[in-house]
Image 1 (cartoon, rainbow, N blue to C red):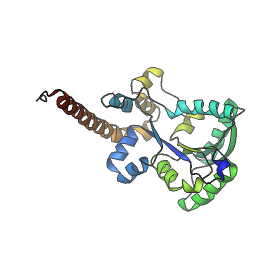
Image 2 (cartoon, helix red, strand yellow):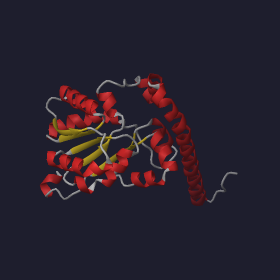
Image 3 (spheres, rainbow, N blue to C red):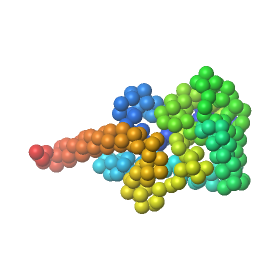
Image 4 (cartoon, rainbow, N blue to C red):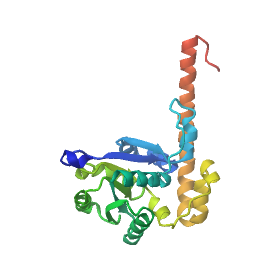
Length: 242
């Protein structure tokens, strides 16, 4: 744990990539730069996994943050590591903590704070997080604020071991947002299920991000396939197909 080294080591950053993130990275250079600061980025969307099959780095599966949280909670309970829950409204944040404690009564919740604070208050929020002694900080501030905030405040959070951004995780933990059926998750249709449950908020978002994400994935995949063909042609001396 970082606490044992005097609290001087900044936390590792774990971000996720999905359709919204791909679209944002394509049009927002600052967000793209922020994402590259992560120590790990996992695929939180099936389109990313499917596109990876056309590249040299094939992802075996999607790692949904909503599913990963439960694996992390079980592992943290066994290892006696503590969580800090940052984000959501004050009411939702309290409900999240209560829900996690009901499901994992032996998991240590070091602290919690809502996400409706101004940037100038970040130093005080970080001080509270550090004082709590938390090992893992869950940051649910919404994309792209949560990624920018995590990178900008990384040094202020020295002593915390991990920062994991978690987007809409809290709505799932409290039961406000139901999970899509497994077959819809596996076929990249979870976005459609979520839209049907909250069309006013999500329809415009997905219509604006999914086409852009698909376009970027296709371009990247075509580029990757072209590189493979050129490499194969160079090795074998064969002519590239026209």
